[in-house]
Image (tube, rainbow, N blue to C red):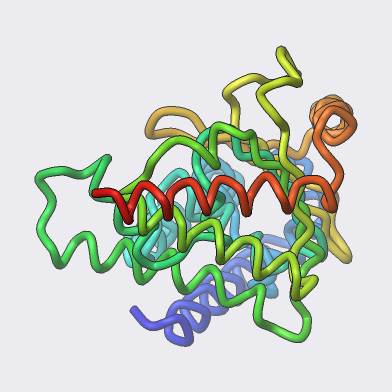
Length: 277
């Protein structure tokens, strides 16, 4: 399903939600209280600004007694998008974010990946997959990177652990070009990157990918990812604690002007390795 068609389908989801809510004589605030979200969220669902998670769609069906229609619509729309189920909602929110702050402990963040690096990442986790499947995954990832080229792109700040610069993904040439790409984005002032060096030692959220998103008219959201799983969290106290952890990581990381030489040095080391193989 093309992006335009998918958006039209989500707009149908929202229009149907509004119609059935109004037919039931329930306000947005009342429905929100029944499904454990704010009335403002219900309004954003109805306008197709935000997409509900599956458990929210299920609770809407219960509250409006709609015999599972919203949960079925949710499954249909999520199935026909290029991302895994657990990441799909985060990908939708990413397009709406005004600011994204990310911590990448082992692998270059998806928004900064080159096509060949992304391909190597997907092949590593899907060694028996068909070329068509890998190509589909890569296309989805490259589609995401377009938000950094938009005039209205979000403020993007990422902290890379030095391990992400040194662990080979693909061959040395792929790694060198990936690191060159990150350095180029930094020079263009498209992104702000800090490197957390090995010398920093122990640090908050060791080994955990963190992703914080800020929005114009919605509360901030945290996304974390594990093995074949991901969690979106917007409970204020949780977001506050994650923000504090991110601030500690930011304080321990090298500043951008000192991070650039670390990235360029790692790229040069991979180039030397490529020349000797």
